[in-house]
Image (cartoon, rainbow, N blue to C red; front, side):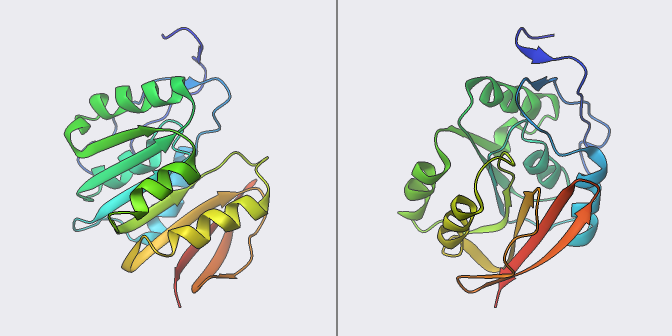
Length: 189
């Protein structure tokens, strides 16, 4: 157990090459996506992927991006501001034996997005799982920037406490509720 981490919350990879791997403990203050919600998200997206890059924003434990890697995505970039969470993501990538396929960037999401925008990288799958206390306007600003980073045929998946606007900057979304979590799936119009 690491100091400053919650021993009561543990996650596992649901399926794919790292199926059943238990991830490290969740840092205090991080609200992880439960195994059940993560499984529902991937069932809605399609069970497995054939390559493509993943961007995991407000990554927390990295469970969403690691799950995508386990299911066949080629590479993942994790963005997280919290130092302990960044450490947890690195440990979790090692636990899943996927550390060579993941890049962990520490910093503010908007600042990191600016750096990613410059070389015009494109991502097939983008996860946005901010703390629920973040205002919808900030999420909207992130989504407007993400539209330029989304690969053709790609999807943006946003977790929130409330449903989001269905159309944002050439993106159309559909929301589904899983208990207290609302997941909105965005794709290009």
